[in-house]
Image 1 (tube, rainbow, N blue to C red):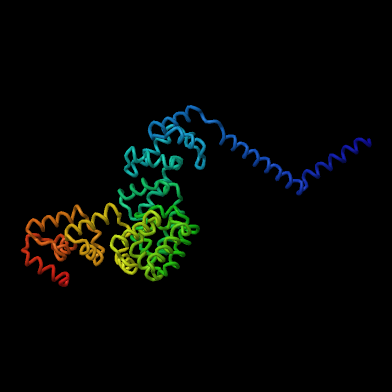
Image 2: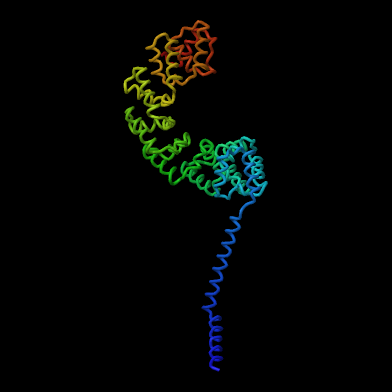
Length: 400
């Protein structure tokens, strides 16, 4: 009897505990965790389920034979898994995406190979996502089909970035540089790599430093960047700062003079001090026997002089003027007074015009040479008489 009561007591107790609210909630939590664990393990099993080797081999052959992937490139693709390993896609998927991209951008075989070899992960994206991204770029940057194709071929990485990422950068650039949509489109067409730079880590601090160093207004800063946006990729510490300091010291420039020179010729940022600027400045000063003041004045007048090659431009052009005038001192005086005379083509302008002038017996003096160098094609008329020629040149040059 006692045993029966004992059994009945604990059975009743167990029933009560099982239906107690706290116990019920605890049991539900345990069941939920168990189900979540089961689902997660099942998902992992499915995700890492071995792919049919024939699928992988087919895709490897497609990438190799059709898209020109090297063995090393294939091995890299096999390791990457940011967007899912493209080698495990069902047979035909890669073909379809390549054909879609070719048709959308009107690409030939070599162009599609260049894009996919550069960014294989594009093949892991769905067509609708690619289409949305491409349409956004085309509309936002006012691109016709040819311009869009050139942009993507040159910068396939743009197809990897999210539309939100690209739009954030476009809006920031447009506001910072005070650009309308057309102006924004021009700067991106000129240097699309700007969209690959980080605004916070690269673009913004570079702009702030440049604006402060050259005392630029927002408008002047915008013009500098529109003219040469590639300077945003240059290091402040290793490139821009030492280059500006060197130029300022070498040419004895004030902050204002340095700023004006850079604004006129932003390409100076792209030249090496040791291999370009220093030897070129030394050559100009030594060859033309210039004082420091004359040198500075000449380069301020035409900063592009520092972009001309000594052996292929400066020296042969100076020799042309010496031979034309028959007097080295007069030729040197001519180029010092007219630094832009170094900027004209020997073969397309200077030599042909000199031959035409000599063919009618013109005397090659200062005014004749000035006419040869600076007259536009519309004004150039070698058939004029000598008196008419000299009268017209004297009027233009102020009787030099």
